[in-house]
Structures are given as structure tokens and as C-alpha cells.
Length: 221
Image (cartoon, rainbow, N blue to C red):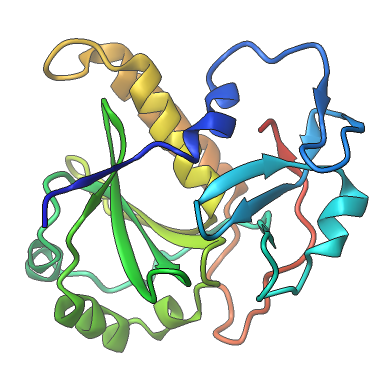
């Protein structure tokens, strides 16, 4: 399977890396939004929507609805056990990626950022299952709205449980700032800044029975 470019979610997340308009509106009802507002995701297309709190509440804890509410919390998975050999078994072309359970695809997807946008890589499910066996917290990711975000660039060994919009925010940053063949200094400074801000927000390891399809007020959209 060749890598698949996934650009749909970027339609909303491009606003993360561009100058925001003076006023944003709810994609469902049209009401004006502030800088802090919830997001929804449409699992069938992975499209992200900006919405107001009343519209977001309609889709809280609605697993079979057309849209699902994106949570807000970020968790550092500092105790995650991933050896270099296990990482190699996942067969990703770069050391920066996120993993999410897709309800429509009925499987876990491995996606990495590239100059062309979000790109899917064929994930060996046996290797993923072994990783989950060593790290049961990975089996508790909420489908479609949460992901394991991994940064193993250089000496980094950072793992986070994040809302899916954070992953596409990172994709948008890389796509927007990439220059030349290697990306240029600016893009890697942006990546470092992104993870520094993520670490500052992150809470400690989540409990295994954490139910996280709750309120979300996330800066920007």
C-alpha cells in the first residue's frame, strides 16, 4: 500500500498557522465564535469543524452520530514502553507520527506529517498489537477523536495522548513552514515550539478507564 495523502482535516486547521479572521463562526449554526471554542470531527471524512458550545454539547458522548466532539485534554505518556526495535517494526519513514483508531476504517491508522500534508502509512497490525500489549493505555484511545502522538526526532522520545486536532495542527505547521528538501531551520524551530507548548499543557498519565468525550475549549481552530 502506498502512502495516502490526507488533506481534508487541513481545511479547518490551516487557520492555526495563518492570521485568524476578525470573527469566526460556528460551522453548524453560524453563530459568532470566540478564540476559544470546541471542535467536532466527522469520522467518515476526518473533517474538522469549529462550533459553539451548545452545538458541541449535542454531540458529547454520541458515538454513532455524524459528528463527534473532540476532547481538550493532553496527557504525557512518559511511561510508555517503546523500544527502538518496536518502533522500526511500525515501518514509518520518519520519526514523527500519530496513531488513531478509525471507526469507518475499522482499524488503527498510522499518519505522519509531510510537506504535502498528512500522509497515511501502512501499519503492520501485528506490530501495533504487540505495542498495545506492552502499553494497555493505547487500547483506551477514543476512536476518531484521540491519537497517540509520537516525537522521536533526534534524541527525543516523547509520547502524548492528544485530541486529534492537535495532530492536524502539527501537520499544518510543517506544511506551512517547510522549505527546500530538508525543511529548513524555521520548520524545525516550529516543531520544537509546538512540542514545548504541548508539554506545558500535558497532564500526567491518564487512568486506563478514562472517559474523555467531554467538554473541549481549545485555542484557535
